[in-house]
Amino acid sequence: MLDADLKPQLQAYLEKVVHPIELVASLDGGDSSQELKGLLEDIAPLSDKITLRLDGADARKPSFAINRTGTDVSVRFAGIPLGHEFTSLVLALLQVGGHPPKVSQEVVEQVRSLDGDFRFETFMSLSCHSCPDTVQALNLMSVLNPNIKHVAVDGALFQDEVNERQVMAVPTVYLNGEFFDTGRMSVEQIAARLDTGAGERAADKLKNKAPFDVLVVGGGPAGAAAAIYAARKGIRTGVAAERFGGQVLDTMAIENYISVPYTEGPKLAAALEQHVHEYDVDVMNLQRAEKLIPTDREGGLHEIVLANGASLKAKTVILSTGARWRNMNVPGEQEYRNKGVTYCPHCDGPLFKGKRVAVIGGGNSGVEAAIDLAGIVGHVTLLEFDSKLRADEVLQRKLRSLPNVDVIVSAQTTEVQGDGHKVTGLAYTDRSSGESRHVALEGVFVQIGLLPNTEWLKATLQLSPRGEIEVDARGETSVPGVFAAGDVTTVPYKQIVIAVGEGAKASLSAFDYLIRLPVEQAEEEIVAA
Image 1: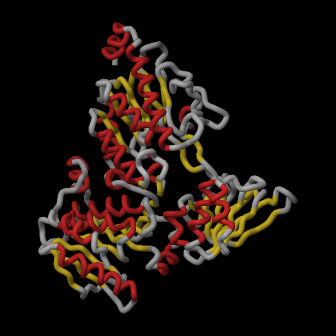
Image 2 (image 1 turned 90 degrees about the horizontal axis):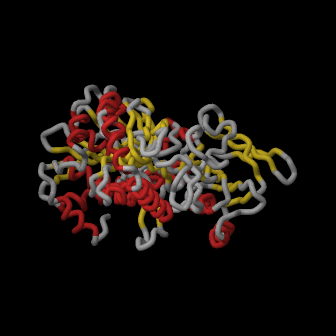
Image 3 (image 1 turned 90 degrees about the vertical axis):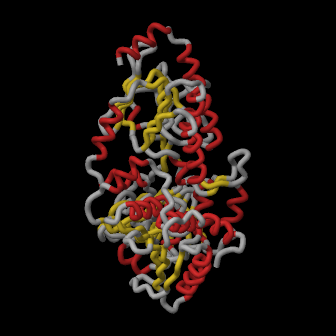
């Protein structure tokens, strides 16, 4: 099962195991069970602290548990955790085996103090790049707290459960048999949901922070670059981010980040965060900004009001809140979100194996999604509003060569239709003839571009008709002392490499603004705060 080159690497990792662990497999006579058996038989001999049993009695087959011998510490996988989940398997082996996790002691204590009975199930797919974060977070929590149990379920192998629970997006998490949430989640996010007093404690902690010289709002590539450039100037720097990494976390293959021939979004996001933490930057994660209160005089302190009620103050602010997937804004879209309407073909495609789906959007993202899905689903219908596709010609040629893809142009989607539980089709208008038409299907993948995250700024600074923050060549906004960078701005071409450069530029501009403030005035503002 394991590649010959991979075995010595895994063996080196397993030298970090402290406590004996036991792999307990629950198998049947199927091919998948034999594949899992082969994987576990490859792993067990790599460490003298690992033993293997094949007499497990779990109802899900194939599945296996990783148990710390003589304790109730355990992590479970239902399926064969390869692909993106192989890292989850390695971390589970290490953490059950006593290797310390890479989270703060504060988070460790928060998880250990959770009181109650928490039985989590995560439905994931091996091609999902968002799933490992959620799986690894819940695995770690189950290692830290015996009241927390977790099993990661490969939806492709347990289709009956997927259909019964109508899981149409991954990762989807259930707690004690009830729907908990869907999407990428961190230990901090999950713990905050379970710990009812966490929000109030976090707000109290933030309220006592001294004003920053530069406060970056947003933790994507632009925000990370801005923070690093500011910290290198030796000035007090903070980052308030709803989720560090931003939209990069939802990006699969990245092949155009100069000097890095290939990487994946979560890996790049982790590298960005690690780089930021190498400097004296106060990173405040899981913090959503809700209001900007600009100072009424030059050199004063701007204020950012957060969703938890706390406020942060700074002499300069860099807005880098990025963008999100644009919705179609048609009837049924929100009603059937994660019930057939989805925005990530890499994550959710395997859940639609053999089914009929539509892709909305004929740009590069839409055509790439259709090509990917064509190898998994039964049939793909791509609908484009314009009279022609806008994707690169090389992608269009590949798309049109696929036998199970139909392309419809001049199509305006008007409704997502369903039976109250899941998607059953969509309606569109033929813009050439004006006729209304219907397509029967089970899934709709929306790929129609980005929407800037600026709703909270509408009454504060100048925005473009598309809602982007208007900036000049230096990243300055219409408010003195407030700068902006990345996909949230009017700068064209929404690319990671451009966002990084714009973040650095905005930070240098903020520093230039600071050094030109009257010294006496700046000192008075700090004292007054």
